[in-house]
Amino acid sequence: MEIKWLGHAAFELSTSKGKVLIDPFLTNNPMAPVKAEDLKEVKVIVVTHDHFDHLGDAVDIAKRTGAKVVAVPELASSLSGVDTVAINMGSYVEVEGVRVALVQAFHTCSRGFPAGCIVNDGFVTVYHAGDTSLFGDMKLIGEVYRPDVALLPIGGYYTMGPKEAAVAVSLIKPKVVIPMHYATFPVLVKSPDEFLEEVKKRAPEVKAVVLKPGEVYQLP
Image (tube, rainbow, N blue to C red; front, side, top):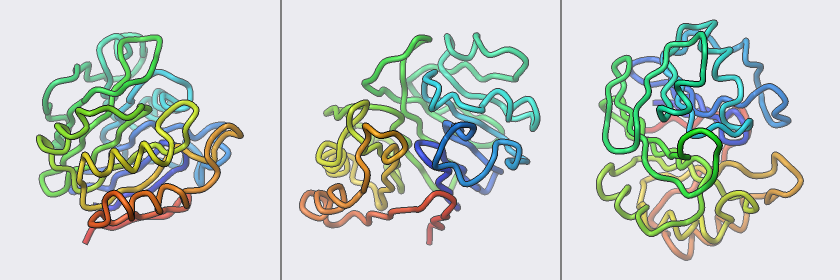
């Protein structure tokens, strides 16, 4: 699997089953390395919650590519003109050959509940935490789903900050962690440096990978 950071909380997963987008906020995203119209052949789009910087361009991309949009029922039912998969938090559901699960996140939203997501293509498991604060059941997410890669917000103000995110790493115990949701807006943490230092102290066995927008991490 190849994991490309599209800036903020947006990721493109090139899986063995096709491309999966998570929270594709590209238009008006100052960190976005591509435009929404550049994304093609997308099979699945997962939206963790309805805030503008996560729902983003999901509907436009889905209409153009025919991708299925996975979201909690209340959010899914509000999206018109696209094929939605209205799952709730609980367990894996197969969508276009990829297994997707929604898990809890502690945040706010207007439609339904905020979530994190697990994506598994039969070979690699990725946990995208969405917008969330630190919570103890991240340990259960790690134990149940055993993610190879965790994508965690570190920006503070709206989500975990660097210290809290490093504690999350110690609970989840992924093989690799990639920080996200920082430096996009003025109120957010500007650099991953503090997070990297905290991970070294709290979970030295976990590999921390910092991507620039547009960069790809390929799992060995």
